[in-house]
Image (cartoon, rainbow, N blue to C red; front, side, top):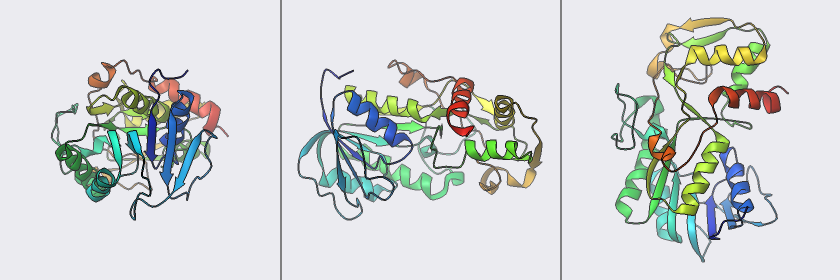
Length: 288
């Protein structure tokens, strides 16, 4: 279905995971789309898409003006500054993260919660906070989407595949700490829909992006085992709590990560229920 207001849109990055969903959505909505990246992961896009190969850390070799720039791969304030300085546009959408918030014991996190240091996320947190600070001071019209843990097919982070593979091999799942941390998730296709909406409506501000369900790590793996129809073996590593988290042992830390999603839902954005999405993705992708 074509959008009533066709835009000239630039996506920086967009070659993996959420990116292809977003490209497809925007093309199907009738927008003119340019994708700029290094072409290391993907350089073939739908025929309606213009692909420009380049390195954002060198220079954007783009002269035209865009209605919207969608930056999916800024990990430092300098990268955001360069994009704002070198590109011509009316609206800027930054693909951020809920990991920009300052560590706290008070949940859920709202868009007005302070940004800052969260040691668990390391340099990723620091760089993404820098990006948002640059945008805050820039004076441009912009939005930031702050997703929680993202799930879905072709996840470049070894999350669902890691858990399903362990269960399939009858290997125990080692949960960090006591496995009771509360977490939220969002599916890649829903994150892409939210980005497409903010792009078309040019809604300014920060928006958390998360499904409605809150679940413990232990209950998550139990539900995934049920989807597979397999028995689950669980053990615990009390030494892997919080910043001592070992991603090679389990893909999610034993640290609460809960946000308020009322603001984005107020725009009419809906989210796939967690268990339904997990089951669909397992049947259609991970089951193999």
